[in-house]
Image (cartoon, rainbow, N blue to C red; front, side, top):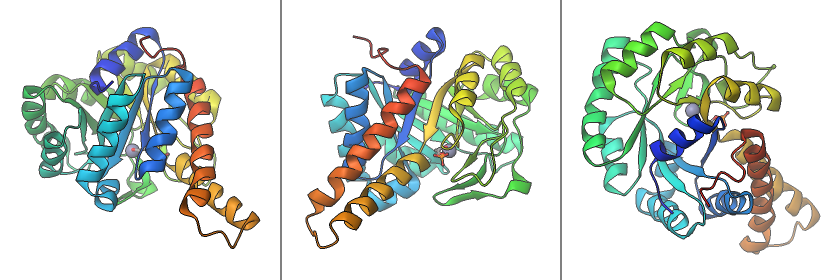
Length: 285
Ligand code: G3H
Ligand code: ZN
């Protein structure tokens, strides 16, 4: 069933678990995530980045996401990940996304507020949920790169002002995670998560969550994180699945034989995450 991001995250916030938001780029990834969600009875968010939309095309990615969601036995939201401009957000809303992220984190606070507000006004009018970002999350996610020296943690007082003035539905906070593969062990600022969660009423989002140790993710959830974004871990599972198969059977040229094991590997990793996030058996059945 296709639902909004807000519906999913309010349930997660109330019950103290997190909904996994997994990046989609093609049919096999969508199927892996939905199979994992159905097998574990987990609510789930399918999210497409601007890079994913560019790769697959908006018509294809929207059709894949909506078809999967409408046929799923669990609640599913279709979300735009890191939308950096107004037109991209509008395009996704027009194609039936139920949730969007407007990422104005590159702007100074006032501009981020103004830009985000513009999106909220339109999205709210058509019942689409809005995520925004405050602070700067390091690393690379498709076309967005923030160097480690430019990454800045979210200031709790600014976060309160940001949410009050923009009226967003959930907030991505920068608390020490980064997009992509970690070089060392990520150091999460748990005290900051707790402070922000105490001040704010909206659900909080953790980006850059691939490669973060399970115990750290569990602690972040216990302190108030309700949405956890995973992209890199799925990419790694996909690539390893393809490589392992072709190592064993290098002359095979059947796309279904090559991609099938990759799809199974992605499903396994998504199921593992759902257990860590505590979303298992929270599928509203
Ligand atoms: O927005 C998507 C996620 O923040 C991806 O993070 O690179 O750690 O998987 P990741
Ligand atoms: Zn992200």
